Structures are given as C-alpha cells and as structure tokens.
Image (cartoon, rainbow, N blue to C red):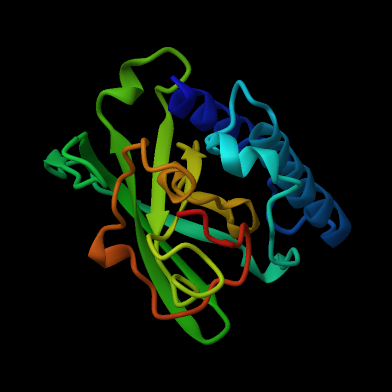
Length: 205
C-alpha cells in the first residue's frame, strides 16, 4: 500500500508546475517544492519507506543542487504495438509492463533516448489510467546515487512532447528498505552520462 501512496505523491508532484521555457526562478521553485514534498513523505511514519532504525536518525534527504539544464523537453515517439513483458524486480515479483514510447532529448552535445513504460495492472486503478513509469540509470549510480538507478513518474501528455524534470527523480524504495520489491532498470535505459540532479544516496543497507 505504501508503494501506491508513494506513486500517488510522485504523480502529484509530476503535475505541479512543469513547463518548459517558463521563468528560471519558477522552474527552480517548482523543483524545490517537489523535493520538499518527497522529503516530507519520508519524514511521515505512515508513508516513509525507512526502517525504524533509519527513521530515528532521519533529518532530510540529500539532493543535488537544482539544475535547470536537467529540465528537458522530450519528443515522445509512441509505440502502440509494443508487446507486454514481465519486468524483473529485486524480488521474484514480475509485474507486466509495456513500452509506451521513447523519449528523445538532448543534454549538451549528447542525444539521449529513454523508454517510458506502462504498468498494465496499475493503469486499471482509478487515477492511474495515464500513469507512465520512467526508470533510468546513469553514471552517478553506485557513487552519489543508488547503484540500482532512479525513477520518475509521469503522465501521458496530450501531444507528442513531454517535459521531464530530473530534479524530481527518486530512488527505488528498496534502496532504503529491502522489504520492497522494485523494478530493475532495463539495460536500454542506462545512460552513459552523469545525471547530477534529483535525490542523492547515503546508503542504508
């Protein structure tokens, strides 16, 4: 249940004030607000994935400084004919996903592509019909971020572009508590660039 609550929070923050090309101060404020909401959920015992021992010492999550260069406008290429598949997780659980589409964007001189996914069970729940899941790995994993990658939650846009704010990314809950079952990052979503945005990792188990 806490996993669903966490996704609900992430989707709420995903909808809050992301607009490509808006005033840079507004972008920073929106990213900081999303980070503060994530921080608050970790501090709330009814929502927090932290173990009791970690919770006692918890003050706040570590984040990279907000970097507006990692608020990117992506071209969404939809893949309506993609086949459902069982996504590997940190446990024996195998949730069924499909590739909803490809996100194409640039960062500096790099042209990057990430697959974005639909959980075919979750989208049957009220409020999650347009839910998209973006798991990704990058060169910070195992150093300043969790070795198992990070996630973003998005909603299906009306058109063929979508704004992705990597300052809002978070770690799999199993990074903090191994009783959770977390999707593993698909190989094709591991990028050869360091994404120094979003949550950092100090290690818990």
